[in-house]
Length: 572
Image (cartoon, rainbow, N blue to C red):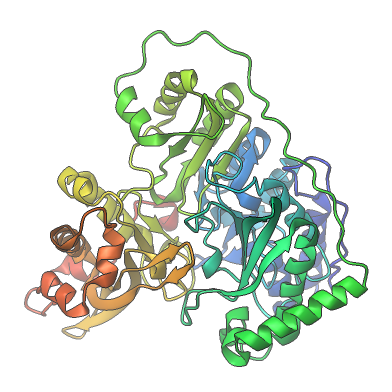
């Protein structure tokens, strides 16, 4: 007996990508599995295509909500809040692909959580599994002064084209796409994605540069250019052609070498470009992929309310740190820092009310696990600050060295070696108490993964940490492989290099010494990440000194215990 993968009709609401038929299909497939009508492997594949993974805690699941471009309205935010509150211990987690994840969901309540999300316009379909995953997008799309045009409507068209489509969920392995367009930087991380679409103009006409084959993990590749410029009318054709190349030529025998970057590695860039051109010709012969763009509607700005007469204490410093002018005069974006990428149900509801009262009714998650509020009138900033204070979301330091990125790690993930969230908490707390270090290197990026898969994107960080273990006196001690000098640049990815292996509890000392080294070696206007990229491994090793060395006689009992991330749900 097979599992149905029939497409379903799209919804008219531009932010609603859900369909309750997906939940009904999940329930039907579960019944088939329980009756022995489908194999455990078939059920596992199907379950993952519906955004559901098993956790290392037996009987608990992780549910990933697919959030195209990280764009959510109040309805979607409240749905995530309801599902988190009822079934995930009250916490929702923002990922580096701008999705929301719910952890520690009891297996018997997965269906219930899926229904809550779907009724609120949130889909989990193809958020995981061997599918076209969530399209990530620059969170400033539509409001950035240095973008050629707003890519948001193209993000939505691409999502609807692939979601539940014939090419999306039968791939050799996952396929991660992105779309963006800020000139001079790669805010959408195109070059570390399977498909990257970068907004460009030619002779005044909008289009996209198409790159493909990027990736992290055990084989790190910067994406190759497939076409320098594709007119917007041909965007779906170009994107589908890339997916079809992967479908036909991806490795279906060895999952470890099944990503499209391995196709580039095996065949070479020129042959991949030829295969892409062939698929474009085939699609053209099929009639192409015509589509109509539904323009993003003008922002639905709320009626003016009386302004607060006196800003809250700390407003000026907060506004200077978190507010950024939009290209639309008189409006600003506000970036909300989320330690460990976590939001409580109450905070999600507070954000939903805030964007409806003081913004355009939409918020966007970011690929470094923060939240961006948009279309805030400059004279409304005191009210937004007051609302964030009430919600406990008024932290400064978003996008700075304080804003440490981390995957969920061994707190929940079956693949992780260490609790990367615990490492992020340790470093974050250390830096919060060291304003002097933060002031010296505010632009330093720190990213942490609990295993080599780089879900925390440690390979493209100024300081990248990968969880591991090392034996000290015959006993395992949590360690982190220390990488330096990575980044996502305007014309490609720069991968961090391994320089040391540091005991988990000595990470603050390592960060401190690296900041001091970078400051001492930094040229005028040089970014801290760039300093670490150019310094020799010998220079860095000398600066670290004995920090990486843990001898049996120096080890304490705490050294043998992994770091605590403070999440009590893991022990429940």
